[in-house]
Image (cartoon, rainbow, N blue to C red):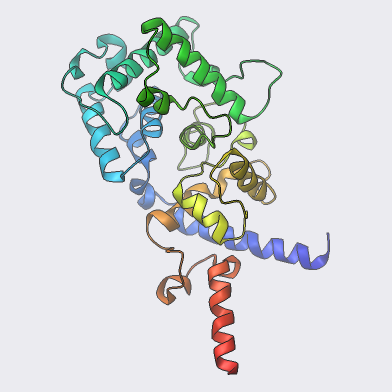
Length: 304
């Protein structure tokens, strides 16, 4: 590796590490769906709430939080145990729809998750990690693990209702697109696998090096602005490209920067255009295409 390349990589890592230190802090947790998990003490409840928070994490943030509040509040402080003990009767004709899901879709999904937990408890397990195994043992890759979970959940849904495949429920569990980036599952698995705060580290058999970047709207946009990838389509290939990029800096923990990078978008610290009060104080300005272009423009204007 040429000395100039080594130096550039060191400087990049310094920029990323600075952003990490500035934004991976407890005070920023309430800007993330992961925040809901910390309202519960039990690791099992955190997994259950995390799964709900991740799979329903699409659409307007206010709408997401409002729906999850309606869903979780009746279950009290031990939501997983409540679901296992009481089922879904409390929500019937009260919960209402959410985005693409009708109430019956949501209730059927909860019934399936309940049966999944009851099934793993028979084998002495507490978490759903064993369901994230590839359908064929020889298959590798996080997307194969996700497909395994989707397949097992689909089997339970079929046992409950052979005609369950509505658009809303199919969308919720993420069926039908092998090229999908699986953003919501990748986010959930980051929470469950990474042991470093703010993540929960509940899963022991999936390695952090296996994780893929969740391509939410912020990572999708920032990965292009920062020159991490030229790909515009938010798909599995782009997720791999972003993950591979950060694996060069953090080989065993490529998703280390995910939470901090997302804060730039969520907290509106980056607006995809040069704004002096934001850009001049940004930790990543030296690697940002927009900042670079603004400097060239200023330089040209000065010369003229």
